[in-house]
Image (tube, rainbow, N blue to C red):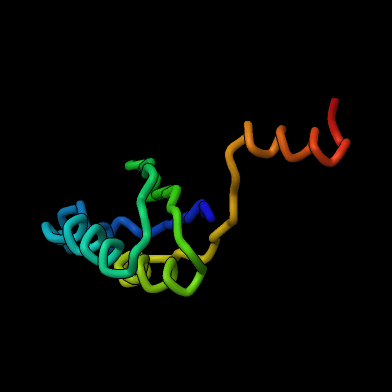
Length: 100
């Protein structure tokens, strides 16, 4: 299953900032995801807004939660939404008779 993970942190907690920089942050995040068996599809960043958005594939939510612990250490990761590809959703809706 794919999930959209929303993350926000303050400028003071930014791992890429000058107040509390963490030059190993990305490495630790990637290592944890590999350890927990989740796949990062893509990540997007709003750098001035200190927000990150990740599309992650995981077998279950418990593996996903373990994999994103690095994000929780620097800010809020309080919105995780299961998602599907638009084309898959359209195919499903057609199969169910909800769309032509």
